[in-house]
Length: 604
Ligand code: ADP
Image 1 (cartoon, rainbow, N blue to C red):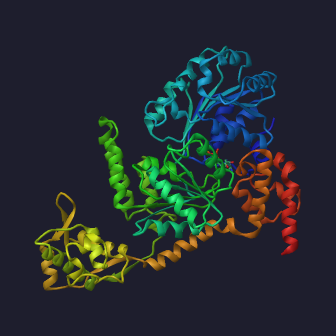
Image 2 (cartoon, protein in one colour):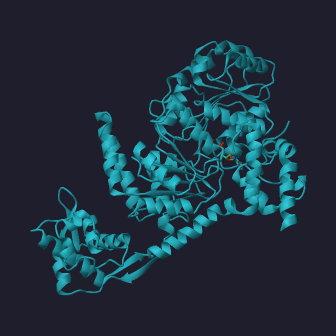
Image 3 (cartoon, rainbow, N blue to C red):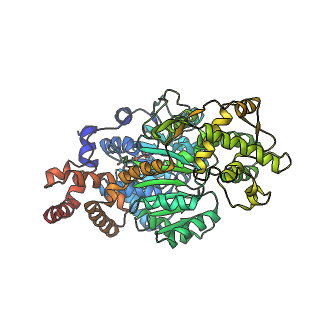
């Protein structure tokens, strides 16, 4: 019998297992129940598909969404594994055909929705005697999880009713210990082999920006990934509409997705995105569940979400194929107001917890520490390095700079603003605007354009002025207080005015240097996507996908295309060495892709 490694290579075209995969495969293969908790993109599917292939006979996968089932079935078939789904969107005859094939031993993996278990499906199972039952997205069985599905509760009784209860393996990306314990209990797992991998997604780069003008920043950002797929999340339907329209006006092929659109339009737009016909998806959080698209190169949050749980899940839709991908969050003070509004509309007994989570989300946007460590700590992982190599804060180049003159300008401005308004105090945003000479009505109305400090720091970016002000607060030269956070003097302020000792702070690199650095990195991320050969391979992949009626990433992942560009295979043996190329795909597509490479070499 083939070993797990042999199947990994022959069927899926990969050389080595990822963290945790082999342990789970061996445990399930030995007939034990199991529970695997791994982040999105870690490769949970192989952990049960390989034991199912090894077991022979029929294995049943319970999965919550038709789109997920369809993707998995498409991907398995592309790899030459017989798989099928029975779901509510099928007509009776097609379903009967699948049952017949399953009974005749023609189907290795059968994907079903949990609701199936309520009907006569139990009889079918008793007769078909599955070798293995897999519960995907197993957190749906738990009240503690975020997607509780009552039908999942039927799984345990149905399993117990089978003459020979098969091993049951559960998988989820939801990390909390309560959910894990609940899954074991509700599914009636028996002495399960339990494996939880870390939640870090090493290929994702996290960063936060506070742009003065989100639209301009977005256009610059999206422009850096000309051919790549990206998702832009917005917090409201209205913003989705506006952002999508703005992108289209600039010639970007963007589609939209939110709960206010018709089912037909949502389905159409999703298809456009998944099949790489529209590179940019602008959406509310209604979009994404059940989307397995592996070649999403960036996720931009145009607004800050309400909590890190949502953020990590949404941002985590980038880079499922393991290639470097980017997760950027635009923070704006108004996002906090929107988030608070949504929370105020939620049931009263949930608001305190929601506000606490919002606080952590805001802290993420403000921290100067490692963003990756912040996220992992939030999810209960404490044994993580304080610094990483792929987040905005850890890669930022800082230098020491003397800011004594700037500090005097900032402090004087606080004084002049208070003087001009009869002793009122203002917040940091207003201070920054006055120092930078803003023409905003709120600045002009109280006459701040007439005071001597107006525009004194107009040659500095808002971020730089804000950072210096934050430094003065941290060092006790200013204090923040009042019902709305406003700035006022401290005893240290007057001392400093009398005797301005040199002030030195660590400053971030200039905005220009930072923009250059980000541009370089995004160029790296999209490099493969814009190269000539990659583009030609993409065109071929899209044509094959359209012919087979499957999404392009099911034919080959971006990672596989990138590997083809890198190694330039000459013959079938070379081609089989490419990650993601197994025997079935070699036979079906090898010649076509090799021909493109040959042609390319010939022209070069
Ligand atoms: P999850 O279900 O955990 O989100 P998937 O099972 O969809 O993740 O796997 C994500 C991607 O990683 C898929 O493209 C899959 O083919 C790939 N993958 C899984 N295991 C391996 C491996 N051992 N080596 C290389 N790629 C892998």
